[in-house]
Image (tube, rainbow, N blue to C red; front, side, top):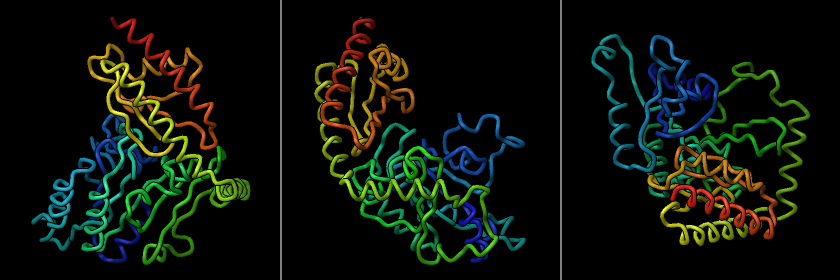
Length: 311
């Protein structure tokens, strides 16, 4: 986000606007929690009722809404124009697949439009790969599933295999914006984190992890669809990529996603809710076929208990 501001300063847009998607999640710093278009995360962080200025939100995967918002942003309010200010699109920041928003993959058409709008407006297309990147989707980066190439993308979490690390990759003009001293981090580039990141990258490359992710992801998706067919009153759509999958809990199921996660924990299976109505599966990228089968069996036992108690 600092890069965006610096880039827009260079191009003399005094009021740059960053578009993010509703139900997104981008972090916990003041700027990234503002980028996170979920009001529940904004509570307690406003100043005078406002978050950080310069962010506007649009429904995910809605092409018409995105085009309309970009058109609106590019019209500077009359009172600002009178004093010489200029508003414009600085960037579109999107997750290739929304995790916290309910395991919702982006559509190719939506991301192609975002790329086109950024190109036409001199803006940056940015992808948040923190959750779906580093192989979890079945490709190294989630945006590869969508056939677009962003100007900037971010990575963390799996990048260090459990060791705290984050990174930002940029190309073209976006890679030339920062100069010495423009931006820094106390622990940025420290040897431990970088060694961990290098070890993870080497392991992914040398052990064909992506093939395992694709195979076990298909096994998991097929198994969840099979369970769904046996409990149609409880479970709905199965969606996701690779080893990031979600199954929807129906409104009249008699239990919430969080309650079902609790039942799964009683069966020795660790899951996590993605919003109020989706159960999220994020197994290790090295998970074995037998382990996926066991996880599915335990999940079905949890479903049966939840279904039986709701009767």
